Length: 210
Image 1: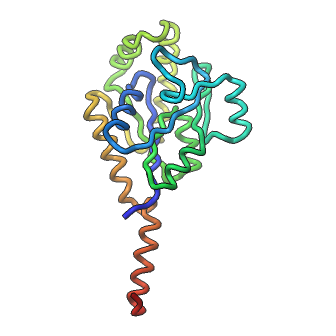
Image 2 (image 1 turned 180 degrees about the horizontal axis):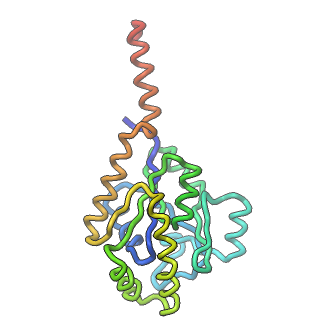
Image 3 (image 1 turned 30 degrees about the horizontal axis):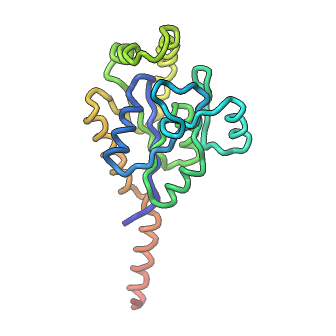
């Protein structure tokens, strides 16, 4: 029983641990992780084409003009977006695709793919969120404060998401997300081809055809 792949959007506060959760999901389960494009500078250890596709603003704006992105948004002074071609190809092949994107982008994806699954990842408390941001040691105090200020706006998107997953214990959060995605395969929208096939077989049986 196989239908199209499940498209899952995972968003969350900066500092919620999205990158770590994504890495664990891809290492432990057969998900296709769509790599986002961005204009922000690479952090230490990040590689172009692995964590992100890093572009200049001019390059990114050309991608927007050519409609090569499913969604895009500007966040804290940088563009982020999802390349279209690879996502559509993987879904058509029946593979589950995960997008790690901002909330505005998540809602845009939902408009284009109504069956998309939206999951919001959050730390267990605001105090823990602040601790994780400072613990990364990758940004200035001013940059961290911008992210904390922006978190209040981000929280307003939570009500539009299908599930909230608290990333307190990493393994538990990863398993919960995998279970949620797995359960989507039993929903009618993802079984349209299988339903059509079994309906046709039953009609043939009724008519006495093999």
